[in-house]
Amino acid sequence: MPEYRRNYIDGGTYFFTVVTFHRKPLFENTDNIDILRSCFKNTMKKYPFTIEAIAVLPEHIHTIWTLPENDHDYSTRWKMIKSSFSRKF
Image (cartoon, rainbow, N blue to C red):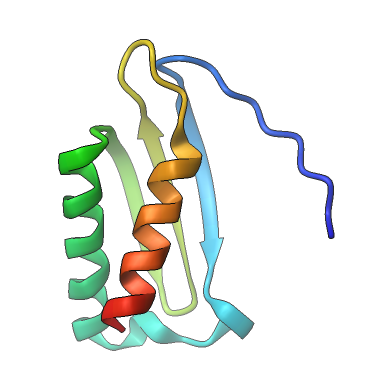
């Protein structure tokens, strides 16, 4: 398992790339993009953050987030987005 180095900065702006399992092109289907969108919205209600930019490609997404002041927990946000997408998918 890789040994990741994560940088946690309160109120930081972060760039992420997230790839689908086995690079399966899940986001070619607009219904799946709608599911992803709802997962982001639901997560943002509980754990607010600002999406500065997002690019959804067939098998991965790129996104830039800014977290609230005094908050650096992007890991929980990704956990919620990924798990809710998997359940809804």
